[in-house]
Length: 432
Figure (cartoon, rainbow, N blue to C red):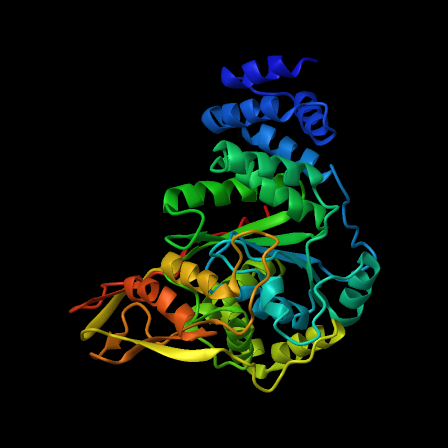
């Protein structure tokens, strides 16, 4: 089999066979196929796309290129969650303990932040003593005992994806639905869960800026998951503005704790409930969505999920402080009265990254005590000189460097918006 023939085949819009896809993935992972040929193939896929069967085969082959986590020894239904990345996205910190309280088991592997999007492990490591790195044996033992663990992604999962993603990042082929979908889903399949919910972000602060493209990605991933035996659902959520009121590591952990106390922001609470419903709906086929909403909300308000979060943190060596240490607070005030028309998530995310809470390069160190608290969000009324946001910065220079981004992130008008959407669509396949 000559790889150059496969490049031509895909360039001309033909479908690759399962054996050809296996040869491509294995050959590239093992170094038999050089970067320049794989770059040509990635570009052919970018322009010609892939059929559903091709994408499923690509996903499975990448998943099998490394270690597959076996969670069979853990009793109960194993569930997982993935977000395509956003600003102020602390959903995992609330959803995972909630699912564990409901009797599900979660071996959650999360990433670190890069660019304007935050990383769950970075947030948790703002808790003194928290260990994001566990061995597989430790992971299994904790999930068996506590019900959940939240750990950093291991290096031995999906090496084919790691290599291919690096190539795509430098060859202009990142924005390909089959390649994005197979990249995400190969890691989720390798993580060993039985059910998965995808939080596909849409908007200024998300990777997917356009709703139709995000829907296409979500549906492709749902098809892949269910086609490989991983029961998969997706929620498309708005990322035009940050989720909740906080962006930054310690600030977001505190907001997650407030939400677990039943006191958090309504948008975060609503999204967590929708994602939980997507994971449990098949266990309650005769119950309405409204009934499930009340069921999940009651568990949050009971405080049980907060107790479970504390248990997870303690099991991984952490101790939640009474008060998180934060940098120096500086206020950004409104220049005129009216209603907030938008809070640009991308600008806020970039501002927080410049403060030091995020990374420009994967090897960068981050600061846990810096960030932004958003006092005002879309459709909130505001008076002249009223605080819009508080910037937590190490010094006045850092504050001055990002203030213009926060000012530009806010747009104020004389009238509120007619409507504000958080959940665009739920894709929850029903059992036949």
